[in-house]
Length: 322
Image (cartoon, rainbow, N blue to C red; front, top):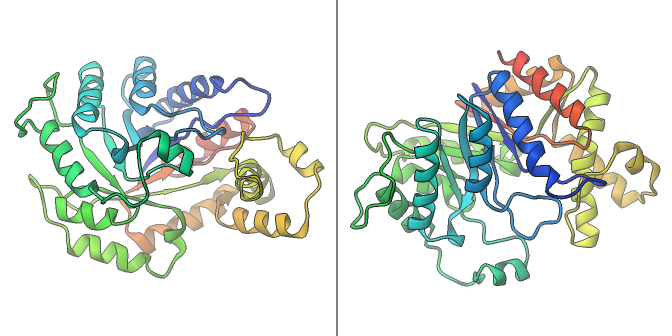
């Protein structure tokens, strides 16, 4: 599998929220040095723990500090934007960083009702995702009645995030699929992948391409790696009580707090879902995942409070799959 990174620009307790953006750029610079294939960023709106709401803007900053690693979005939430505007943003990126830009698109309408209202989205509106992807591709390939500018020298590859009917849309349009989240551990995973590959209709010679996205953290021991995973898991556990997905906190502060039995169970469930461990443990889990999915690419998305430990994890993962 090719190895890539997804960084969600997680904020950290005790640091300004905007510092997360600089942390993302610095992580991308290191990822390029370590031989990662792609570096992707995300789009989230109104989430206290995530600083990235504008992937194209952040990717411009990443591109200015790197030279070879591919840049992409995991992803742009297409229902929030006009396809022509998205095409224009990523064609500008492709003009600035030719031959390096990918465009991953998803269909999330926003995490909460206030965010959806602010984005002018409603829960009951028709799902136009497939139509929007077709329109977006037409702009990127100069086949629409309006020519998006600037005209790119090469293609801007499109990827579809497998939320909702994403796998079906990707197959029908002959596009690569990005698959992550709970479905990776569910029985229907095999059916999703089989349906994608059997239903794939090539577009301009394209072939099925599956990227699996999951949290991966590597440390010297399994216990140390689980501790690295704790801040992200704890943020999710707390959000289920407070409704707020907050900044990453130091492990010592989390461990020093008071948990009830429900918190403890949820933490254990969350840690079990993360691919975290010493190199041999992580290798074994990734080999099992590769066997189950036949994936072409791993998009690692681990995060933790300790940036030095995260850098060491990124380096260990790159060495593991080199």
